[in-house]
Image (cartoon, rainbow, N blue to C red; front, side):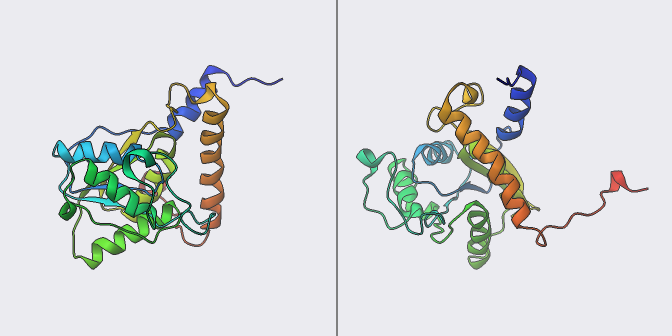
Length: 210
């Protein structure tokens, strides 16, 4: 029997659950999901004046190959949607975000594509962004933040994690579901970065130069 000690758990927690202080921004980014929680929070941020534009992104999960339907919130928001972004738009509209403040991205099939296709959409509409809030699931915060910051290196990105499935930085290690989500994120981050070999530059940084 092996045991993760308090320090080891804290190291994993600090890596997987980043969070930034919020300031007003140009836009709120929402990575795709078939659940409403982080989009409900994005609607609240909009209502409180944190940003004038909200961009939900998502077609369907690449692994599933098509949109498999709403996984939570269907009783409140309905279930008849063609893709994740359509569902997330409905959540935003129900949260008093006006339609003209929503710019949908409907094609992305995984997190990196959420960021890439969001950038393409902004470029298509000639929208310049200097600062953004990334409203995402708490246990997805590191991976989502990593990809959006890679795709938007010039943008001040503020990560705003939202509790989903009851999994928080305080309790993730106490349940099988929490551990599965967090360890799954650790696995995906490593695997996906390895798959991106050749697309990422690894150079000398000024502080490491001789």
